[in-house]
Amino acid sequence: MNSSRRLRLSLLTSGAAGRFASSFYVKGKRLARASVDLVYPPHCACCAGALEAAATIPFCSACRERIVPAALAHCRRCAAVTNPIEQQAPDCSRCRTERFRFDRAFALARYQGVLREIVLRMKRSSEEPLMMAMGRLLAQRFADDLQSLKPDVVVPIPMHWTRRLMRGTNSPEMIGAVLARHLGAIFGPRSLRRKRRTRKLAELTRQERKRTLRDAFRVGRGCDFTGAHVVLVDDVLTTGTTCDIAARALKKAGAAEVTVLVAARAYPGD
Image 1 (cartoon, rainbow, N blue to C red):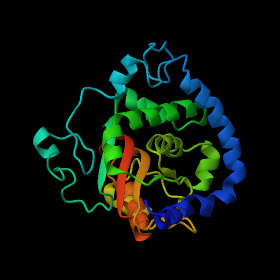
Image 2 (cartoon, rainbow, N blue to C red):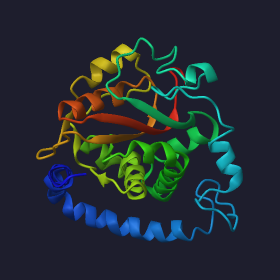
Image 3 (cartoon, one colour):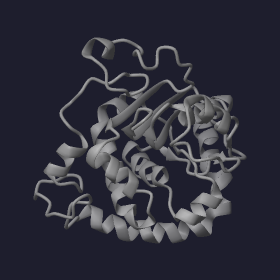
Image 4 (tube, rainbow, N blue to C red):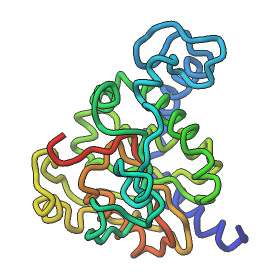
């Protein structure tokens, strides 16, 4: 990366971080305490059972097998489970007619079973160590793919400040911080902003989601994504609408590529 590119990308953090320095300091203390437990984890972050001595991530082997089952073929474009033939194609039957602004997507597994339970648990601020554990699992699971793509910036899907105040945490942000550290990439937690509070999307159709989220995101002041490869982090990808609209905002700001990385891939009705 040349010096001018590095300077542009530095704006992703310097342009927004100053206004949130005090809140990041408080958050940093909590992260530091949680990191100690993750470096030397006494228990599995999912079931609280004992960890094997050789564990490289804070999940026991039983939970890991339940979170990430036997390898399945996934669509390169939307991360949906597909067949081995479609896996070699640029898209699949689920996304072939969709006009996504992101370039590719990765997910651990389908939004069901223990992975669904984890995603729901991660909505609570008390589960920040679990969020960090998921970040490490994602970094390990997709290490080869992500390193070959050479991403510059990790950006979490933002939560509106009122909802963030009520919940006390944002799991994509916690996961993204861990991923950025493992990738050696810039972390831009405030480089993408949610302009307004939107309705909850779980029970909306694809078209309702598009109307609800239209122009819901904007790039933070002073942030220049020109030529950058962005990893966009969320907890679940369902219709792809949220990540699509966020990717559109990033590409309008100059991003060259947007790779979506989520914990789970859901389908309407899950």
